[in-house]
Amino acid sequence: MALPTQAPLTGAELFKRQCGTCHTTNAADPPRQGPTLAGVFDRKAGSVEGFRYSPGFAKADFSWDEAHLDAWLTNPQAVIPGAIMPYRQPKPDLRAALIGYLKELK
Figure 1 (cartoon, rainbow, N blue to C red):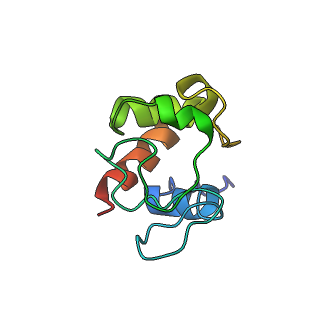
Figure 2: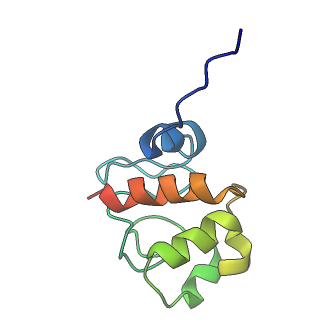
């Protein structure tokens, strides 16, 4: 008898499991180890008021779009040298699910 296959996790479920410890999705919440990700899509990198970013963010001259988020989730330090984020997601399908969820956050 074959084992049932598990349905893929949604972006929201992935976020909760993999990102929710360090990030919140509510702009009114205080920052955690990372800034709030409410409204992150199309926001200038390093611009959450009241969050202390690592120095590399001062040189970041872009807004978060799909390409930057995909590169960031693959290897944060390659996008912003010196960034303090240990998370890396090597699987393109999981990055795509997370990015889709982040795009929905207002």
